[in-house]
Image (tube, rainbow, N blue to C red; front, side):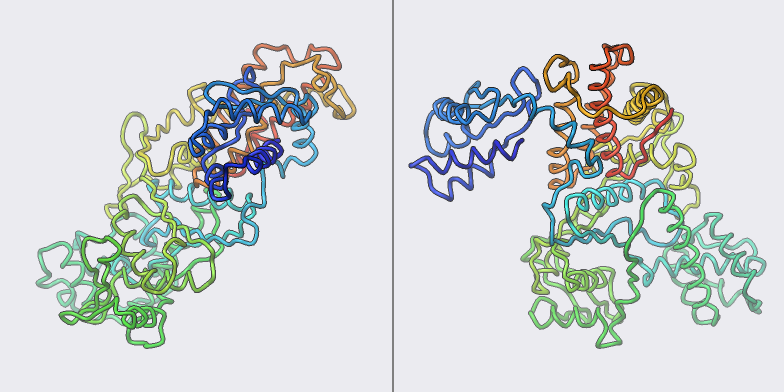
Length: 580
């Protein structure tokens, strides 16, 4: 429908003698043909004449009258008229308007999908939380968002690969290992436990599991570990890590066991949350500077050869001044240990080398200042920085019984993602995480998410799907087959479904907007509008007592509505309910 209108608009623009190709391209980029917000204005509207008039210095109303006259004469539409300051409003022929029902019911899973991204590959890296403990609810929003945009882009024809970057080579993993080590040998350490260690009960669980399958050496002199440790909390844990590494050969075994234990928990929680990854990338696979052929060494050498990395005071720095960063950044420390930034540089080189057309990084909003330096490194490595699209996600504030939920991992006192799933379910959690634009602040009321009220958007939309499912079930109990054609809607004798048909016709454009903007919340807003349109229709019309002809038409229309709700939910990673 929209495509046919746009084709005629394109012909109209090309026929104007005073316009050139670059102007036509500009007009098409700035104008839009959309479905109307009110059926009184027809089915579709375009502002193309307003945009064209501003470029051609003409009267937009005159252009709109001219375009409407040409489209009217084509006899492809019921009516075309100019409106307002230069809009054209199009009313479709009845059979074309109603054809959406058949299009959906013939192939419900395909409705709204496209081939816009055909032959294009996208890599989405998200969550990537340090594997130092279970995922907390702060990670849930990024997990739901990254997974949802992957589903949406896949539905638009893109080849999508979802990746989790595992920070297994840094200081935090050393702190995790030291935390588990002390718990393994708690009898020797007595009441001592490092102030900046990880304190959750999961640390004790990992320690017990390790001892169950491994023999451990007793510590002969605990003072070698604890004597004269620095008073500063950060220096204390670093000194303890150094001593354990120096005194106990089991360090590596404990480190691997702790890391794998936490990763297994993360994978299990993500599976419960209906999130999967195609690839788990280990930071340790990047190597170190001691290996001149490692990924990290090669990345640094490339930057040095381009005069973007330089040595100063024994360290290697990246010149990020051209990217607008506020200062240059350290890549390699004086002791030749790579910084986190150096690992990220090598990792992004690896991602680009894999040949993706687009890289999408889903980061917490606190990483905003990190974008410029990564862009500088990508440009310095010889790649187009526009290949990288960083989507920032604000951590959600969760409230339960009027109190803010704690999210700290280090303290051990936190509300985990698994706790959230157990309390309100995967579907409700994903829905509310996605209910607002990802880079905006979100207050998430857990009590509201489980309430059976109209104010609970999740319940309101699910109830629409379940109610239609029930109506279809009652119809099938009284009829052998589903009806074949919505005759009373086609011939116009029954028009009460028109608002529903108009609303479901919007779905493909909503999906397209969502894929272009990477905004899954647009689908939620749309589903809320669709659910509202359905509930209003149901409350105003005694469906099952209609005449046979009208009932057949209504059932076919509602079946299409149910499919659109199910399709939208699937893109959000949510299971539509059949019964409530």
